[in-house]
Image (cartoon, rainbow, N blue to C red; front, top):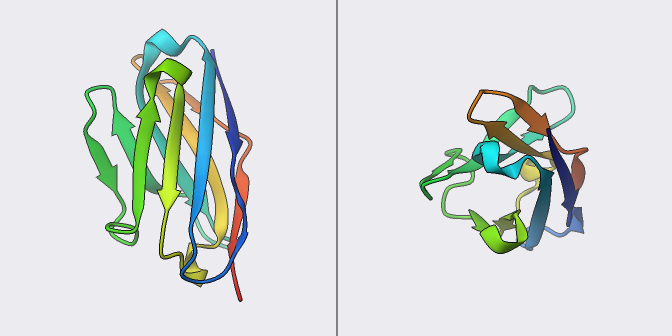
Amino acid sequence: QVQLVESGGGLVQPGGSLRLSCAASGSIFSIYVRGWYRQAPGKQRELVARIFNGGSTNYADSVKGRFTISRDSAKNTVYLQMNSLKPEDTAVYFCNTRSVSGSDYWGQGTQVTVSS
């Protein structure tokens, strides 16, 4: 089992920045990939960014060049730096971890609202 605790969401104006954090505990030795997903009202949950054990990363086309995923292995924490935020980035952001066995673990979600 892996437990995930997210922080860092909030209200920001268009063009602003936020940094999300996701701290993992439990069976962290089994982690294969860590990522961030988001779900806007009335829409399906979508992948935003992920980082694999080897360090490679994937980003949704809509956030490339604006968002950066990173990790601090010593703190078992993954970050999502979000710059140049747009109203369409408004969503609940979920931290995800997938183990080598294929099990998915989710955080509780944190609201990001981009509005003037």
